[in-house]
Amino acid sequence: MSAFVIENASLYGDTTADLVMVDGEIASLSRADAPAEATVIDGSGLVALPGLVDLHTHLREPGREDAETIESGSRSAAKGGFVAVHAMANTTPTADTAGVVEQVWSRGREIGLVDVFPVGAVTVGLGGTQLSEMGAMANSRAQVRVFSDDGKCVHDPLLMRRALEYVKTFGGVVAQHSQDPRLTEGSQMNEGLVSSELGLAGWPSVAEESIIARDVLLAGHVGSRLHVCHLSTAGSVEIIRWAKAKGIDVTAEVMPHHLLLTDDSVRGYDPRFKVNPPLRTQEDVDAVRAGLADGTIDIVATDHAPHPDEDKDCEWGAAAMGMIGLETALGIVQKTMVDSGALSWRDVARVMSETPARIGLDHGHGRPLAVGEPANVTLVDPNAAWTVEPSHTASRSNNSPFGGIELPGRAAATFLRGVPTHLIPALEGASA
Image (cartoon, rainbow, N blue to C red; front, side, top):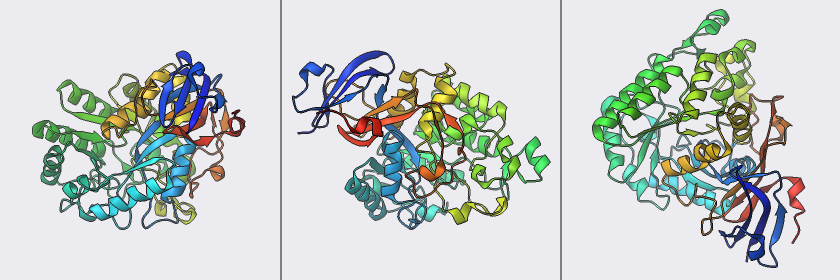
């Protein structure tokens, strides 16, 4: 029997209770009901949330194990407070068949640190010309329900319509990387004052907004589910707000780096700040924060994108796009949204656990901290200020732009079905 008691934890930052976890379920909210042999963890000062769920993670395996593996990515996710991640399809080979998604799913289950749910490609090889075997992936052991060509946009409107129609038949969702390739050809950073000063080709906001506008109209026409990946501009927030007011079934995500950083960070030409979509202006940052606070933006996802040193330790123009973020996401959300009063901890549970789990069709995650529910729990220490040191990450890559930045809190413990997958040293000596 596996039994743990988290004593005196603050559930959702509201009510103090004892979380009794027995054989993978929350058995009670009182220590008096705990088995005598249960391990007791002092949760005083800690906030208990449903285990975090990331809808947008790059684990690189198969094919780019030099950057990340499912094991190293899972370890990084657990350290960041996550119990489940959705692994994007841009692997080598592409996750566009039942065989590849089952390989990713099986490897995640074998490691057992987080639940790994493969995201299937929308098109064969991410080529944007032929729909993938979405039905076969949906009916595989992996039971794929989220499909995305992330890293590339499904640019052909007819193909996007067909994809939306296809996933509707089994309750799936298309997660679109909104980037018009013609408007961003050769682009290096956000188009604006800073790009002009630095002499770097600009990446206009309209390249994102035009695709989102087209796709919400297509989703409304088809009556299917659309999810917008890594929304980053003020205009995109307004389009999503309009679409929801019209009753269109659309959800959207924002990344931690788009909540915190602006294109001013690019002034030093440091490739760690090169990301897709690019860092935007302060006006955009303010708009996405407001959109997350008022519910227009549904979730926070990491877009954890590991790269080996040689892909980032080079001149700006040649550097790969992307940054790691599983271990810093929670601290950045606290810094930008909770400590500012824009979100409560109960809101954090909604945007980092409950809603991403619902978009990915639950799988037993994002459930309430209540008796009878799965014991998927994240303990947050909101007062554990720490300075980010990228070389200390559990990821195989260290391409984080947050090195040297102080964050106000972090995950102290992560439990997957009642089993600890991450404990800070102060909690490792828990009493039995």
